[in-house]
Amino acid sequence: MAKEPVRVLVTGAAGQIGYALVPMIARGVMLGADQPVILHMLDIPPAAEALNGVKMELVDAAFPLLKGVVATTDVAEACAGVNIAVMVGGFPRKEGMERKDVMSKNVSIYKSQASALEQYAAPNCKVLVVANPANTNALILKEFAPSIPAKNVTCLTRLDHNRALGQISERLNVPVSEVKNVIIWGNHSSTQYPDVNHATVKTSAGEKPVRELVKDDEWLNGEFITTVQQRGAAIIKARKLSSALSAASAACDHIRDWVLGTPEGTWVSMGVYSDGSYNVPAGLIYSFPVTCKNGEWTVVQGLPIDEFSRKKMDSTAEELSEEKALAYSCLT
Image (cartoon, rainbow, N blue to C red; front, side, top):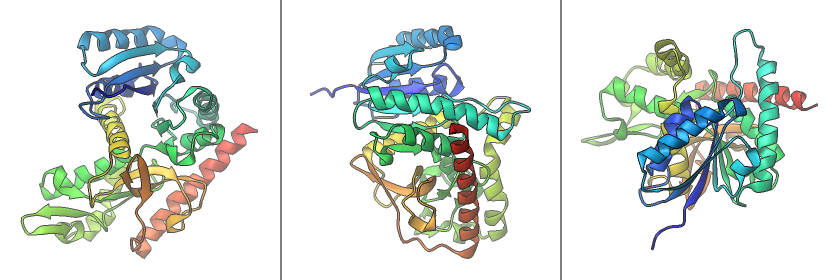
């Protein structure tokens, strides 16, 4: 029997990431090759014509799984009945702008979108925030959509997770599919901590720790971390545009694993609402290693944390606490 279509909202859908993301969703990359979808695309009025162009292309692509498209600049229409919301739209930092200015713009955007989701989305709607500052935008959304369970509001650190897998794969010259269980701790910013202490690689002799195979702690504790932290900036420098393709792919990975489950013995990184695990202050949206089953994520518990990692994890938590205070000051 055919499945009921899932309604997926993409905000900022006429932008670079949106343009890369909507065909992936329509092709079944996000929810599976047998799951029909209805796409809800939202953008701001100045982008209405471009948004209509994206809708035309979706029609022209004749995706068998795509059962309908809503393209609108009206937030209530966009949020009506959605089961999954991918929040790509946000206010980007422009030259000469202070952090507080960007935060203030995004706080007002996420406050109003949270209210619309609260009012019009399906009751158990799952939310993924992609727009930066992603962790804090997600926190604001959570605050202003109180009927959406806190565990249903997440932010994207899967892009950083995938970047870390990619760096290890290149360094060891192994397929990326053989590398697993890296962790991104903390903020989707340059303070995030890509951690390989628990990561392994599948070899002909079984699974081996990444550290044992790389045999270069200086690289793993230095250049590897900064490469992952600065990868977005490196892509902007090379492409003269931000990383849209990899961000869209990571958003699909994030939702797919959340909805369909992570493979046995594998965890992924998600920005989720902290309950105090690993001594991370409760009440922040912080990236942890998680496993997913039956549409629920669970933080992987009991991993040993060395002193080097502890400092990095605390430093990114501190930045998130500052961002939270800054965001809340914009509400007054």
